[in-house]
Length: 218
Image 1: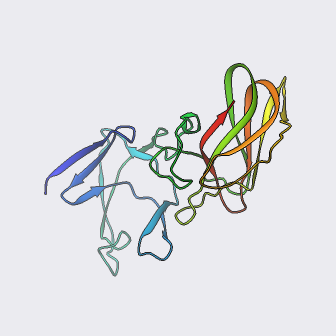
Image 2: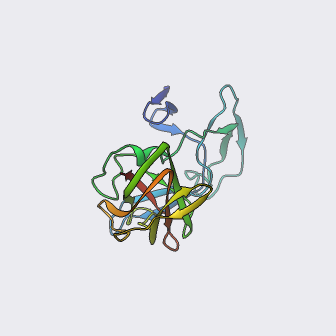
């Protein structure tokens, strides 16, 4: 069988190695979850995953006793070991996503980037904006990421907006409620503040993480 390589331009120009119908990859721990009542499965990493081969590193062939089923990863009688290194640019999330201005089709949209606090769950998290100069602000909108049915992210339990007053973060005096609905923009208005630094703080639901597609302010 012929060995070939493929370059994935949309994934930081990463490269995969194929041999016939097989694609080689570094072994990681995996968790499978069934998607609702369907036969489809979602696969999630349970160990560090964003590692790539060290260029020029050799492989070592390790022989071991075959298992009951030699066609499984645990039962195969041989294994290849090599060196790997973490690639920080490989991420499923984008820190720039909330500032992209792109509105998703829904809170479960997978066609555009999003920002998440994964894998922190049930904690209080925040995202901060440096506006580069002092601006008067009175409105913030969020579009929350929620992959109910396929993953572990949900709209937050609650959220609020804070602004940096000197060296102290202060909550804004909002005049409309903080909504946490999926599949829509959640907009709050508040008494105008003049600030260069703004934070959106989110209280994640117990047992779940969360994230944002869009964060807009005026």
